[in-house]
Amino acid sequence: MAESGIRAEVIPRHIAVIMDGNGRWAEQRGLARTQGHQAGVESVRATVRAARELGVAWLTLFAFSSENWNRPKAEVDTLMQLPEAYFETELADAIENGVRIRTIGRRDSLPASVVRTLDEAVRRTRDNTGMNLVFALSYGGRGEIVDAARRLLRDHELGKVDAEALDEKSFAAYLDDPELPDVDLLIRTGSELRVSNFLLWQIAYAEIHVTDVLWPDFGRRQLEDAIRDFQSRERRYGLTSAQVRAGAGERS
Image 1 (cartoon, rainbow, N blue to C red):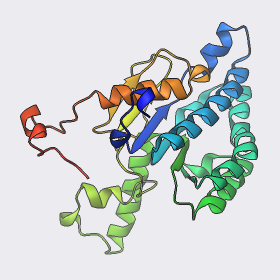
Image 2: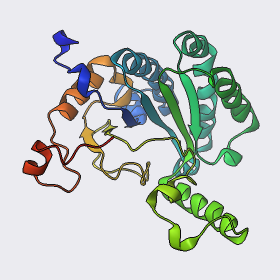
Image 3: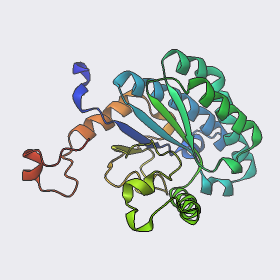
């Protein structure tokens, strides 16, 4: 990685991406918004492969938000076809390279065909030990926290949870994927300066990288730019710079 200027020992463990700009990319070219989403699938392929090759352990992609259901039906229908199109060509590659597919979000809102596609990808890669590739579908950060609270309350009613002993770690066990680690680097394409209800619990101390590049134009070079930006930051977690330099800010 020396030629890229990326330090292999400081690769972010968990990168999350808000893939924004498909519609604008299409409109700039006089195309239908649906064609922008289809073009965005190629960027997913390129980014997943680059992240795996760079040694990223977790990559979470914001594929479809809970708010996206309010978009025009034709656009939603196209978006719902993309998981099947992606896995039709990429599942074999994921299996070959040890990538484990995972999903978060409200699955009961998804069409049955999408759920079947996701379940098949999850099942066939569940024993893989390489990069974890997480698709956030019908997902919203507030909804995830509310759903976690519901699960927690049910366990409390059954006497499985001591309210006085509840802390952040035990609450996180009720999130959509309890194994999902905190985000180190949050990337947003398309220049917008907001987190859009994405991984609100997990991005508490994430470094945020925003690029003007629209998602269909995002690839390995832009991912490397974001990682270099991440590696230039001082992560203090509420401490002072002096404390960090003394080693007090080290986190597992």
